[in-house]
Structures are given as structure tokens and as C-alpha cells.
Length: 589
Image (cartoon, rainbow, N blue to C red; front, side, top):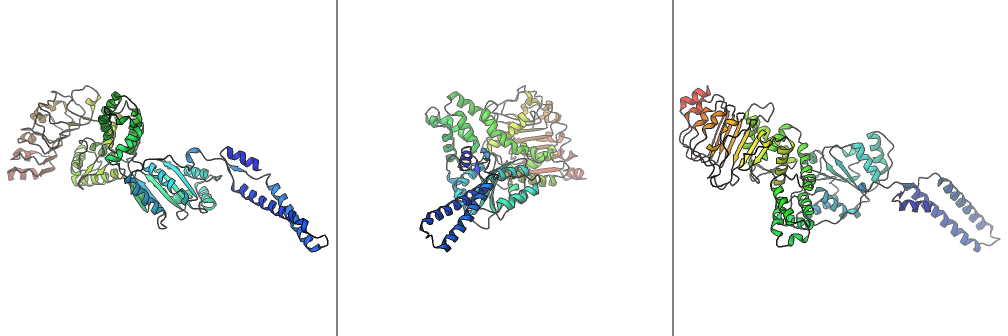
């Protein structure tokens, strides 16, 4: 029997509890028999009573050994070893960052708190949730009899989760039903020892009790990129992980890329590449490993691809960074959420996006099904933004009425909109003359830098374009060299929303009159004086003018816009006259 057990151990299999008990009892019987044999020499032949007592004990021991020998023929000796991916083992050491250390200490302290049953660790995809939980697992290993880690993933297959737990605990599950398996896990193993159960990558709410994990019998840690799921799971503690700061990001990047980045000719480029990762650990690790010991030309090409939101020739980034973040986008529940998310990537990098902008743009584009009232549109926008933020695809901006998109997330959004969604959107700089599939896009954002004599090609043809945003990414300066009158809108007849920000032009272009379907016009921080052409936009429903300090008078023909539902004037300091009372009276009636 001992030989069979040793052979099994060499195959990475473990002795069953049944055989361990059998072996312990057998050892005890042998020790008792040995003691009797050693004491027989001291017995006197004529001392009948002690001899009778010893003989009786020897007979009982012999019968017990015979019984154990018979049981040994049918006993199950070993359990198969659990799959390697499910074995709770010590993990490879990882870098320790001060910003994460305090979180780890807090979680470990909570595990010792009798009032805390479940702890949730949440954050964006690739921010380091699984790495943190592995570090915690290694640190508390001596505090628990057993630690079970299960990857839940998107489908939340409860039967599969039960099977994984049972395999790690070396417990056979012959029951076919969820309840039957849960009962066996609860009564046979889960209540007997001090356990830590880790549910990694949770996407949907589920009840641990349903799969046989009692709240009172163990501690639970879950990780998720969905904050609302953590709250729905009623976690006692919800810990949110953020990206690394600049110093920590460079430490991780250098650790993965090696000391080649210390070379004087490479260091400046390496720092730029690391900066493009914006503190996201998965991006830093992936890019660093991919560029380790590569030529400077490869580094420069990587910088170009990362800056252009199009890593199609950088497969490691596409697979390990973009695809995991795209999965969060795929799990947005409605098309309205997805559209609102993609709308955010049209704004400049690192921009604080005003929620009012998103509300009016969404309303003008008809993003929200069944919403016909602007105030209802604002409420819907706020609600959906909260949902998107709970998935860590957006952050709160500098002010409460603003949101912000992480640069890597923005790159993924641009990739989704331009590559995955058949060129649905296009984010570009000055060059609109390309003849590629972007000509068929529906949403377009054009960033005009403060470049002297910047010109746009005449006669642009975008037959499907619904939204055009003309922006200046340098908010401290107006676009001096760009002349909006260079744009001919004749090839954009389907345009419904037009948005100008931080532009400097004397008047709106007369070619706006070709936009017969334009419903929303937004002028924000623009040095424009003459907007009289607005009166020709017969379908206009929303006119927003924010901080356009050159406007002195709102033209009277605005009162002739029969479909105008919202006239929004904010901080236009030189505005002296809006419109004659009789004109407005006729419009309002």
C-alpha cells in the first residue's frame, strides 16, 4: 500500500482522506502489537491473569489488522491531481508599488475582520486586479487551510465553477444538478476548514450560496471590471484600482523592456513609448516585452503606431491590450451606451468632456431611442454615463459635470469605430483628402492645430456623414491660420450635427445653406462675429452658442426657424441684442 501511495505522489496525485485514515489506524495497530510482543518476556508463566489479559488484547489487535487488510483491497488510494491552471501555488514575484501596497494591506486586514465576508477588487481591464489578488494569495497562504482560485469569465457557468472548486478540493461530484452539487460542496468540504475562495474576472452577479460556497464558512475575494456587479454582489468592501503614476509606470516598463532603455540614444524614445501607455500596467508590460532588445527603428515605429490608435502591425498590443478593453465595450448592454462611449473618443486626447455637450450631440444624432424631449435626453445621458463609468471605460473629469476618457481606452474606441465598425467614425488631423474607406464614415472629428495657413481641400465628398466636429486640440490658442470658409458642405448633404470649438473665423461659411438636414449647430469658444447664415438652416432644432465673445447681435432671422427647440446662449460677453420681440412671438406661437 505504501508503495502504491508513493507511486501516486510521483505522478502528482494525492492520497485520499480515506486512505490516510486507514494508514494511520494500521500504524497504530502495529505499534500496539509491537509493545505487546516486547512485554511478553516479562510475564511469569504462573501469573495467569496478566497472561490472559495480554492474550485478549493481542487477539483484538490481530482481528483489527485482519479487518484493515480486507478494507485495503477496496479502498480508493489517491485522487487525481487538479489541473495545473487550478492548483493554488506560489506565484512568480512581482514588482511592489507603493500605491498598491496600501491597498493590499487594507485587503489583508479586512480578511481578518469577522464582519467582512466578501471583498471586491475592481478596475479597468489590464489595470492589475489579478496581479494584486495573486500577491494577496501568496501573503495570506498560512492564514487559511485552503485557498481556491476560480476564473469565472463572461459566461458565469455555475456548473463549471462547481467542477473547478471540486477538483481543487479533490472532491468527486457525481451529482448532475446544480443544487445537488452545491449541497455536497457545502456539507462535505466547504464548512470543515478555513478557506479563502477567489472568484477572478466576474462579469455578472451570482449567488455563491447557489454553487455551494457558504458566506459563513469562508472568505471571498472577487475581481471585476464592472463596479456595479461588485455592488450587486453585496461586497462588504469594494476596492478600486487605478493606473500607475508616472514614476511607477516607468519602473514597470523598464523592468519588462530591460536595461537596453538606459542607452543614451534610446532613452528619450523609450520614455515617449512608456508615456503612450498612460500608466496602464497591461500596456506597459506588453509593449515593454515586445520591444526588449529591438532596434531603434522598431521603437520609432511602435511609437508611431501607439500614437495613431492603430496597432495593426503590433500584434502583441492588439491581442493583450486592445482586445481585453474591447471586451468591456462589447459588454455594454445597449446600442445607446456603445454610441455614447464612441462619441467620447471624438473629443481631443486628455479632454474634459462636458456632459451637456454629450447630451445635445446625442439628442441631435438620435442616439436615444424613444427620447423626444431634450431634458429627458439629458437625464438619459447622465444615466448611461454612470453605467459606462462603472465599467471603467470613462472617468469623472476635472469637474462633476465632465467625464474623461483614458488615452489607451480612447485609442481602443477609435480602433473599434474605425476598424471594427466598418469605418463608422474617423478621427483625423488636417488631411481630409484621403480616398480610403473613411469617406464613407458617419461620424468625423477633425483636429485643427494652430498651424499657419492651414487649408482644407475644396469639394469634399462625405455622402454618409451625420456628425462633423471641427476642433482645436490646443485649447490655449485659437486656430489662426484655418479658414472655415474653405469647407464646402455641398458634399455632406446628410449632415445633421455640426460642432465647432476654439476656431477663429469672421463668419460662418455660406455653404452651410446646403445642409438641409442639419438639426444641431454648436459654436463653442469661437471668435466668430457673423452667424447670419444660421437663418437659412430650416431644419435646425438646437442652436448652442458658448463663450463666443465676438458676437454682438443674434440675427433676427433666427426667429424664423420653425423647428428650433433650444436656443442656448452662454457667456457671450459682447452680445447686446438677441432679436425683436415680435419675431420671437411669432416663432413661439
